[in-house]
Length: 250
Image (cartoon, rainbow, N blue to C red; front, side, top):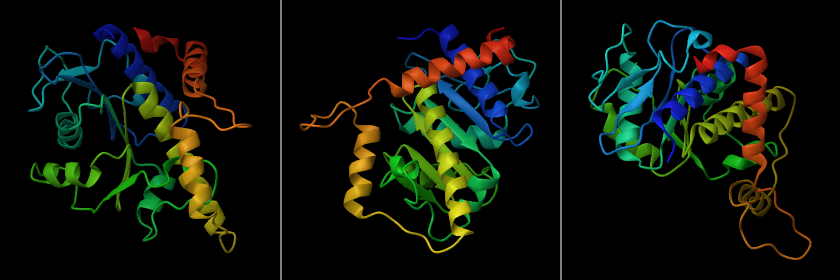
């Protein structure tokens, strides 16, 4: 089981990576990770800091009621608490929750069709996307039940007229999902602006989704798998951060 220190460094790294890849919205949006133990405590960003200012030590530890459980000079974004506490409280597998307001993500969130399987990248999410209708800024605690119900057991959710959300069993899994969900949205918008879409068949999309999400499945003759891909990519991203933003571990 990862220690709190390890999770702090992983979450701080995730904030820095979101900043590096320009998926931020000033001090808004949020990423959280649940800490080990029955208390359902989780770490979230100190409200008021840019994502490239976040470090392992300045993350705020709060409970499911939004109360800081350790002294901190920083407040917590109320909307971040509403969204993240709901999902952490409902999904044991949602160790990390990541939410963004990117241009591409918000644009796809405003499309009636939602995310389409227009490219290999988007097929990772084929049949895996939940949708939640917009209700206003997420400050109403009653929205938590509807948010959780709409998410169900899916790994990603498009918040209509709002943005994107991913969950993961680890910080790295939530980040990699968001990185490629964002790429999928960018590719879709570029394709839709260019002409008539060509979409693969349901069978091909479903097969590709399994290749991405079930690399340990039994293989038929002539098939290969790449089960270590995401771990190798995350390790490479941490090496990148150690070059461009090593202070995240502080």
